[in-house]
Image: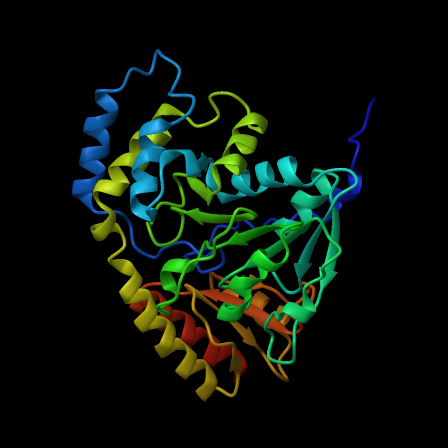
Length: 344
């Protein structure tokens, strides 16, 4: 029997455990469900859809609306099935055999996996003593630079000065993953440039992880390349309908961001009071250095109490850490109570 061509990719696949628990705080989802009014409107829009027909292959209405949100035309927007498909399409277009992608550990594990599956050489770099990127730490001899800002799993933001780097390195392509942008309260300009692709998602601040909708803002030439690579009719009519309705309900859907930020800061204080070392976070999660306590053992003890967080202790560059998604006030209180119990 013919086996897979890249068994090493299967062996190191980046997937979180899908376990049946009472409290899931491991995948950085929104703790709040979309409003009932939004769900009713989605149902009404679906009833009007022609599901016997293929969807709009170019998703022009959705791209136009997203472009309006970001002050660009539809020709500067690419949409996909979650940011992971978007990332893969960018790697297919700008990576591949003979090309390299630079990532700084610790960061989102899917970059390395997508690099491997697209046969792009992944070059791992480092950060300064504060866990930040600097121009000096970013390799200048690679095809593509991948930056997660704010970063997953640390939750930290990258220095504003880095935004000038793409204009100084026109021979490199910059992929900037802004999945957690909405939880970053800085008032600063967005990344941009002809050689920059900014990736966004509906999975976090829109409370729509189940929708699987990601998109890219980039130069129209980049967008043309992505649509030349992606499979035809890749974005279903249902996905487009829900995403368009979500844009109509954007303020209501994103109302939870303020709740998460308040809970995040309160949790950072509580974790520090327990003698732990939470990283500063501009996201909807917190990476916590567990200090003298064994992170994997604590993960298991929490799991025994039907609470699932992310064991990050085996991730490159993390060390003895757990990553905790911010939940509702009640969920966070339960997590903190259980953590105090297992620490004692």
